[in-house]
Image 1: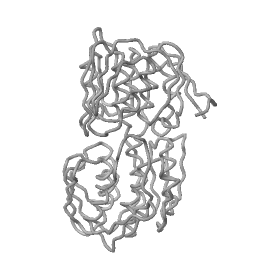
Image 2 (image 1 turned 180 degrees about the horizontal axis):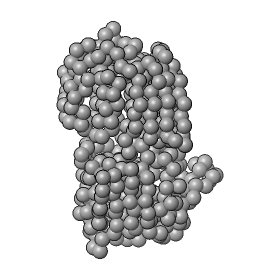
Image 3 (image 1 turned 90 degrees about the horizontal axis):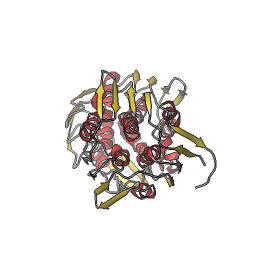
Length: 422
């Protein structure tokens, strides 16, 4: 099993191009099921999760061609078929549940295994299912599979009990071909939702308000295939800015959307880092006097929960005390124990973490527990003194395209090695 070998202590410098957004690409790939013909997607990242979702739509009758060098995915749909999405495909990735929306819209039937994914606490799909029921579907669970049936989806007004990116995406895909008007309240405002809405609008859907708390959808009878470019990945962008910050280097992210990382940039500025930006780039460099910071994770446009773990790695290197208040997931401190192995002084209680910074991190063998926790360990190893070995890097393969190659281009001493077990 592959692992990363990192010799820390090098300041990262240079430019890094940001890949397409995984969390936008996944639902957009699934949404291609809504129209017969050939859809062409550009800037699709070559990631494990992307390859898995491609297999999922192939189960439903899609023909695909993925040029991983050019990051172009072609999807041909003649017709989609009723098919049980097997557990072996979906157990590692929660986004597989996204096929329910398009299947209900086109077939009036969906049969999908309850999803898996990162071990970061309970992430139930009850809001998705409540939304489908509001549109007129009947929901049941048998043998660990969710079965949804509807003779005809009809427009509705649905208020989500809490903000959910996944539910907003899934219900929106189901509603675009429902009869009449659907009004969704308390929607997620993430850029991923907006990118999906823009894709659906290109296909002929009538959607208003994506990116706000209220989305209005007027159902249409038919959609057409289109060509679309996936937006840049804001979490990858934030991770590389944090890599520059934790090594006290100077890193510029390109092919990015500065607005999407504004919450992170505000926090970095508050710490004392120097932030500069243009239309599609952001640069971070070390300031003269750094200090601790308080970060509270919130739905977009707040500080993203997916950057909480990498930010905590940076906090361990800042003078004074920093605090993390994690409000999105109840079990997202799995990286804390591994950071402690590297010399970090972190106390946790409930959804709060207090980081006593300023102590030099030391290299250690550590293990990834999930995708973003894994990123925090890579960042910590870049700043630590000595040689670190990071295991279970298949987690990072799910969300970071060419991670070791991109870091190497910035001057990091990181190698992907084979063997080592566990």
